[in-house]
Image (cartoon, rainbow, N blue to C red):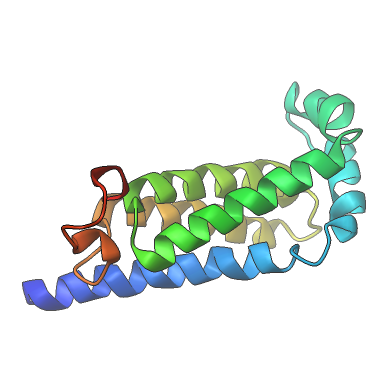
Length: 149
């Protein structure tokens, strides 16, 4: 593949991952009440010692705070990836968000094969960390502050 096509692909991939996070963030913009049951049942369903107790004793009683934090994180990662700003840092945030979902929500699904979709999100975000913003990103402009490049 030519270098130009490779750079364009990196940009398209980054943009798509940003849309992925934007979709999931937007499902909670109108309210996070629908995740209450999910977050409160995560602890009992989780087989990992230590994590199970944290989910039961810390997350479940404070589900609203954690739901808002997840939504804000998803929104920030989405906007930065779509625009191509602080791409690698945003993608690292995406890796952490996806890893958290894989370790927590992934165990609540009945089908073990479905669990791998959460791990796929970890790998997709990791690919953006490796490939960077691509050639079509706001971070390519000189007027963008260095911290956002």
